[in-house]
Length: 172
Length: 196
Figure (cartoon, rainbow over the protein chains, first blue to last red):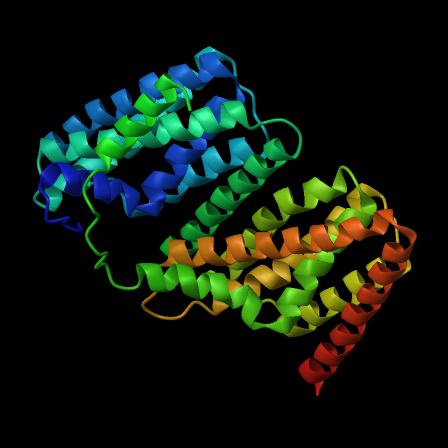
């Protein structure tokens, strides 16, 4: 874990920013929610950081990181949904967001605990998730007409492709 | 900017008020940059990827957006094979052939059915992805390297689509076909170098 030198809260914030396999699915989820409209976006902004925070707390208590060989799955699932322009109903989106947020949040919390950090770092990381989700969801709500939606979908395919390659890297 | 927007921006900045420490994990930034540079370090990759964009622009919708969306995914499958050490015969020949055939398609303004175009481009994506996957330098971050070359490939497609936009004008259509011919000729050179 990289230390910011400014305390555990900021260390936690930095940890998410510098962990591509955590950050990319978060960004993808925010965009999927935003492309569904304002109600979907608000749902994601509320649920994703909350699920991350609660699961992160559990992760710090259990302190058993998730197996590395499944790290690729959130990237492929989220990236694939975004690439194929899936438009889930609010209930399905809520379940997906909570599931992914909990998965990633738990892994983040467990990793922080193993690295010697505590709940303050998890709170910091949840802050990053909140800001990132808010900004990307708002951006997707505002910018989705015409070619802009295609650009989001291309970004989704990049995320999914990175996930497929991470699978190869894991198996290598 | 209205009051609510200012509050939102200020809140966001407050959460990131501290300057981030320098990243010390070895290989991560180098991995992304290495991946980013890989597609543009080989003229064969560059020409083929730009030709995909140009051809997509010639074909128009939905190919113009379908190819950039699906190409990275199919290329990643090729990269997966390369990372796992599964050999793909004639990778360099396949890459050269992609430049030849895509250049020829642009030169002749060939309008294949969407499925045929997608299958052709998909086959080439496997070869390109395999080449990237086998060439990961030791000590680099696999995920960031992968992200880097996927992003670079996507940007090359975008450049090709932007170039291909000139086909809406008569002189532009001619210029585009000449460019396609150039890509095809370069592909012949790459093929000769791969075989000889």
